[in-house]
Image 1 (cartoon, rainbow, N blue to C red):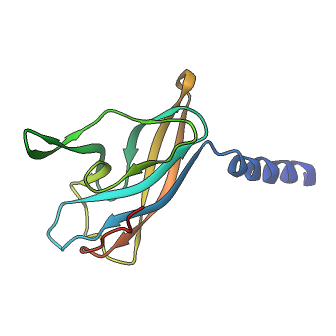
Image 2: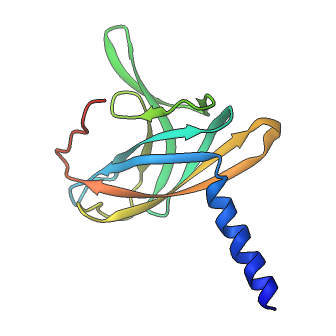
Length: 146
């Protein structure tokens, strides 16, 4: 039994060390009480070529979106996937790719965290769920420029 517990602990520890996808600087914009949408932003890096193919959160409906300029007008649209080139951090940021949180079940308040699950597809179709605790920042928050 002692060896089984040790083996289980080692397996869990090695999963963290060998994680294929790393998420940093995750944050979401706080909302006013009646708001039903917000955005979540982060930096996502994969050790191998992969694609971000889905997202979910218990706070509401979540989708991958992209903002872009079309005919001198900023537009936002759902995207099916976001490429994650091996070893390169991809920014999910205001004005570009991001996680759209919609049909919010409650207000997102500054100082709390909200869980978000990213679905990443690796070569061969293998999928990995990446659990992220997203920090809620003030409504007026602007991230530092890189």
